[in-house]
Image (cartoon, rainbow, N blue to C red; front, side, top):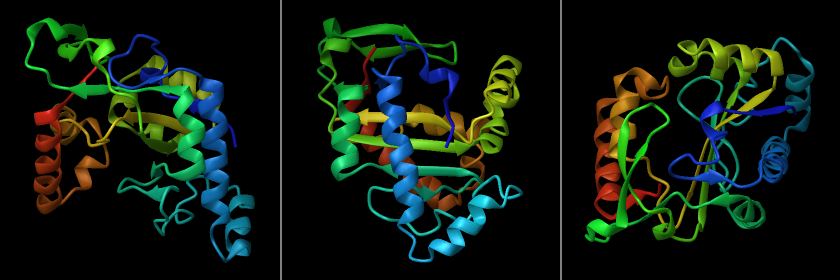
Length: 223
């Protein structure tokens, strides 16, 4: 499998979770994809899908959720994994935790520029907790190119089309205790920045909002 990384992950000074070794993360992601595919009992079905070049989205391969492996997201061609066991242990040295607990001390906070361009309040980097959990979001090439943010970014479109990967690592969350999205991220996604968010039901939105609010009361991104 050929992988690429979304442009927002390439900034070595990005706020939140950071990748310390792209080579290391790529090795773990390739293993994750292989294990997710081979966990199916009907190997013949999977092989037939993989060799059929017309099925480029691999839709259906990761339908059944398995702990620690890839499961299909709501948007076609998007997959999510909350890593466990050996895969989690292997990837932890290659990532930097993206959040820490609120302290209430103004000296512990800084303002940093978010990848979207807006200024954002963050904890100082040294306040970030040690990463213990990792969530990966991976898209097929076509799903990534259909993402609303990518559609508006001609440079990123050209980069991915030139690389021509099978999958794109879209996002990685390395956290001490909570990989939930922040309230700001949820709101931005619901406003049209994410295809999966557009498919959420009202009940799912309320449930995610409660989780995001609980996350934000305790945790904040490190800058």
